[in-house]
Amino acid sequence: MKTIITGHVDSLSKRFYQPLKKHSHLLIVGNHTNQIASDERTKVLAPKHWQEQIHSVFSAHACDHIVYFLNRPEEGPSQMDEVGKLVQILDAATTYQVKKIIIVSSANEFEQEINQESRIRSTCLELCSLYKQQFHLPLTVLHIPFLFSSASQHHYLHHTLTQLITENEIHLDGTPHESISFLAQIDLAILIERLLLEPEREVSHLEVPGKTRLTIEEFAQVLQNKRPEAKIYLSGMPWIKTPPADPDPAFQAFRWSPQLDVRDEIDLAMEQIEKTATKHRTTILEYWQSLRKNHTTWFIALEMVLGYLLMSYLSTVASGLVPFRTIDFRLVFVVFIAASHGHKAGISAAVFAQLALFLDYAALEMDWRLLLYNVANWIPFALYLLIGSTLGFLRDQHRTTETNLTEENESWADRYVFLNERYSELMNSKLQIEKKVISSQENFARLFSTLRKLEEAEPARYFHEALHSIEELLQNHSLSFYHLTNNSMVAYRITASTAVQNQIPEKLTISNFALLQKAASKNEGWMNKTKKAGEPVYLYPIILDEQSTILFVIHDVPFDQLNAYQENLFKLTGILLSSSIHHLYQSTEKEFVSSLPQIVTMEAMQSGIAKERISQ
Image (cartoon, rainbow, N blue to C red):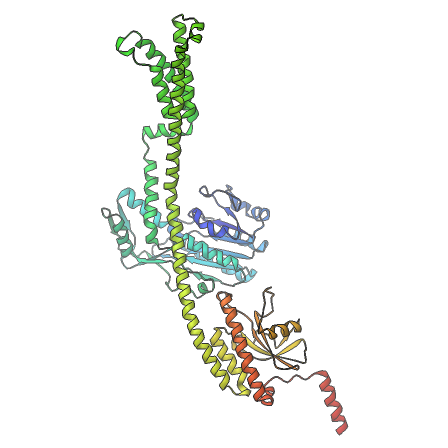
């Protein structure tokens, strides 16, 4: 599965792409994607005029899905070619028949929004609706509130916090009681992932809620608590209208709800901004250090050459001054280089010092054989080498420790985000478990109620009463009963739920009757594990005798009920029905059989015609 993510993606952080990379290969197309690096599951394209080459991009990279980000006014003004870009994306989606296209747009309406900005956005949304109707594009529009991420810089929260930190003063737009909603990028990514994993679910648009909804006054108070010394002013002028906070029922089908609270991310975002602001305050010393870091080898070589010349000069000058004769400037040179640059530089400096010492001996006209064979003359040479290698090794060890500590310190931010996400997932799992426990208790109560209703039902109304009772028990309205006779391969409908009465067939073709008999003998139902279209999800056979079989069928199941718990509940319901129907069949056989649809076969029709002719 391959997904193209394009449009205004400059505000998206690396964490946004992590959930999407689990099930899909990503192709990120945009002009501001420097912070995103290509890897085995992500490819980044940043052509200068990509909108003119969009069809070539689609033809070269066959994709299944498209995620397109429209410009959001809170992050910057729209460009003049915004509509043209969207048209090219929709044309490409139509031409290459993508399985799903998701358009992400802002849900915020600004009171002082420029007319042209408003027209561009409304035109884009009308285009999406037009293409969806005319070309039947599998298109979903997501209307989202303010996005935020501690690892991204191009969004409203980052701009606000940057002004707060750098200027220690901020002017917030809006009246005190206007509300703004914040949605984490990672939450949006999870929602998009769920939408892409189920492209067959038709959802035209979604008003995506944020985890945190604050009034302007509450938001100002949160900022004031983070920076008590800062001055925060409210403009008092109407600024924004946000959509209702009630979540769409469709989110329950995708098992999605926002998890990250913006108040938990502000501290981390402020820390990142302060680090960035500190980096930009460059002094001459920092510039020199940066230059040395980028050209380490050349600077070390230059320092060694300059140090060698200075050492030679000081040694010559010190030889005529009595107080300095006890100082070995060659040793000072070795210590300085080794302590500054490490093991390799220290040994190189020791070689330079040995060379300088040898030249000094040569200047004194000492015979090289005396220098070589007198072991006492070796001591300075060995000492330079020993001190250079020892200090250099200690320096390298210290540098390695410092690098490891720095990397560990930088990883704390990612660890915090990771732990925060895990905590949110655990809290969500806890809520789900509590709901399941409560649901189990309710299901046992409903099961008892269903059993009582089945026992009290009259034979003529049995299947209608059973249908309504089981709908309440299973929380499902796509149920039906079928009657299979004479080991035929066709079952005829007895009754069905009102919601699916006009959608399911009157006759159900059974491809394998022996499989039904085997399932019935083991008190097991049949489940459509191959997900074949047109076939029911669950089917439970109840064999009355050699001539008659009742089929209990579930035609469709919501996504959140596709689990082992619901499957076991279905089997239990099938066993309950089987016991009830057998009991009713044994006690009122004729009355019960009369409630079943009477199937007139070709042989019975011919026999009836023959009897009528004889009587005439």
